[in-house]
Length: 605
Picture 1 (tube, rainbow, N blue to C red):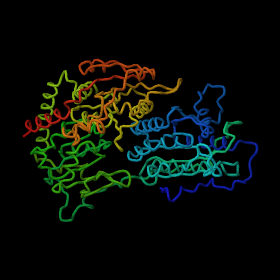
Picture 2: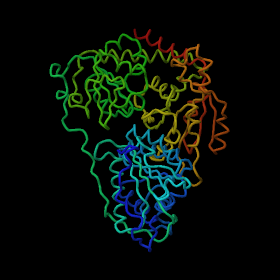
Picture 3: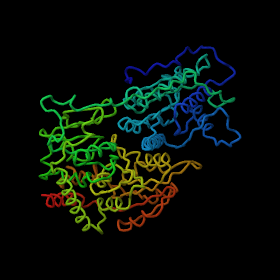
Picture 4: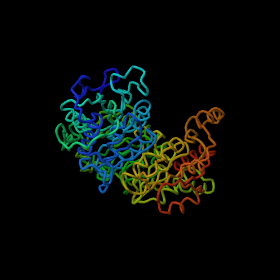
């Protein structure tokens, strides 16, 4: 990956401005059409477009590729793509992110392309680029630019776009304006091949976003027929083989402490975001407790311990942990991070993707590129009675939390709303959960035997783009999706409700837990009553936004319900896009968190 000071990767398209022109064709249109053919040939199926003038060659090309097969104006040489148009580049980036998540969940990881014009349009892609970078999602940001001779001249909507998305993107390609020189089509295909290969992590097992900055000269409107498809210059990059077969822990462990069957070390498995079913396999095979975040994708099963966050917070059982096996990216709770930071706990990290690994406390003893054979075969914890103790504690903790929340009925607290939502969802459902309190409340109260598909943007855990991500996920999966988020996250991405007339509309139900501000700060040090006068303004940021009026302005059905009315509302089928607003009381959030913790400690110890 190139850095902003190093410049971008030189492209084969770099050629003198006075190269011979093919006057029989429009170079910008030709290059855009060849590029779109190459994208489709390399597996791209979805393109998200935010309109603009300089990107017109690409816009017309993908619009022609999205025409129906029976459209009489469709060119037979145009590939078939699905196009999604959004007015806001930031929304477009997160819709593409959701589409990429849907492809990964469907077991068919493929890049999703985003097209924007020049100038500030490119900068609006940075939030989605950062989330994609930390989540390992293959996005192709295709940004239009002025030709090189206009850069640095004060030309309208012209800035230094090369490097603008770094270091979020894996690599930047700066492609000069096409001029119709010989072999230009082949070079376009080669650039696309390299961009797709890097985005998929085919060579380095590190998928992520790629920036392709494409200069165009006028004319920008299409002329003539499409070129015949060609594979000249189209390179198919075979995927990296990934985790070496037969990896064993013995090769990595201290020779004085070999890993053997039934080693007697009291171990828990921590499954963070996107850990995968391997976490469940490891926990089950070794009779270890599984402490899994909602978006870990580990399924259900008897090893999954409910209310684990509070079990780790000051209980005797937590103090007995000697080793943690980490999969995925755990980011939700301070008790988990405190466990991973303990000097008396051995930490093994399974990091299958990318150059980095999860170790915020900088105490990992072992990092391996895949689940070792010993952990899959199991027996390391059998016969210890360790798992039954955690299962019993989990049941007691879950009862304690339920008893507290029963007393909350009528108060409409955040954890109560999350518990009611979780009770209505099952294996056939899809839930996108927003950052801050919603995902943490769900983590606390959900105790699914057979969970729904839960998706969260935990790469950087921002509140932005949640509605748009859920939109892309619904469009990509072709299934109804619910998204559960707070009022600030909703307001941050309310533009995600908007799509132009005629665009495909997702079946999406947006559930807004509205506590009129950022109540997560009440459970942190900022919730100290002594800080209340200042924290209310600069941390909680209360608001008087009329969510019903906003929905009306976007033409989206809205319904306000109480917590007691929520279960019935959730049983209605999800058709089209709608919003359920649940008013939540945040005034007692800090006191409720303390009561929950104390109740669990009393029940367990």
